Length: 401
Image (tube, rainbow, N blue to C red; front, side, top):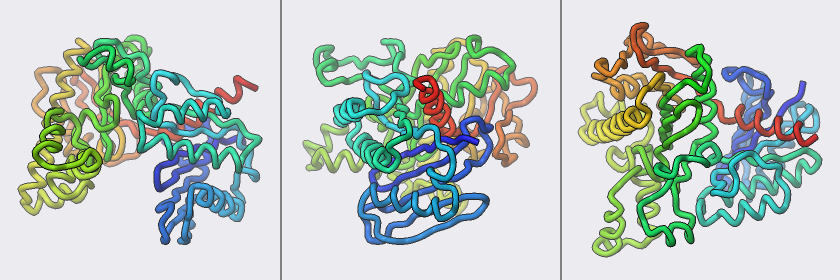
């Protein structure tokens, strides 16, 4: 059996999987791993294989140490990349700008082009490059493929992609809506037509990727026509720690009257806002516990979250004209029945009816949660970005021989 190695390198962590690209979406990966707290004295590496978890704690100085140690652990377990047949290494890259719209075979030139896009994703692309460079050193004889988070939304209609600012300034500074979570949105959008027993070219759908980061997309006849995230992943829905859409004048106000620096405002909006900013927590399990204890801030945070989500669903219903399906995915979308129910409450006159028992059933399988007479079908479909990256990387590697 052949596998793909998928690497998602963050600023202080590395997630990786060895996965069969031909497996079903709900199948567990052959191997999964997480390297945490890179650069900290108390680093941790956790690997799951054959139903068992293996963990070790040690200082992890950098990404190279993290990956090299992880690969050594895999070799000890008999499932290392030199012990099984790896045909491709797929790398998640957050920002492809207007340069990359499809997966790319990685070479030195592609790495430099990704580096040139760092100003558009200063928190993400540098870490992605670290992972690429280290993995290429460790596995030099296997094709490495970059899969871009922004790729699915590369060809948004201009009316959705452009901001109403001076055109010359926008062009000079590459300012436009790029969208993110594209691999997840594309994966889900590809699953839904089969559940409707219709070709993708006839399906209008709304995909709601609700995790600690959250985004929505409107997909018409198989092609995205709008998405909530913008030039950066800060825009759109209220998220775990990110504000989502705000009046841009707030930034000027905080700088001029609040005495805050640009870096302080950046930290506020990206890490200290959203649900956490109002309630003090960003995990929805904690949020619901606090609501049950009648915590006013938790209840307020939840209502702000739901209000913004419903507002965007309504906007996308208008944009699409006809909606065949609404699908929830990612951590909150897959596991939080209350959020799903409240997001679509009171919409029966629009043909959206949630079945209470179906919605509250916990399952890791794709499923319908709407009633049988709901004209808009509502689904919960677990996302599997790693499998999608593995499939794209393997396909490109095979195509290039």
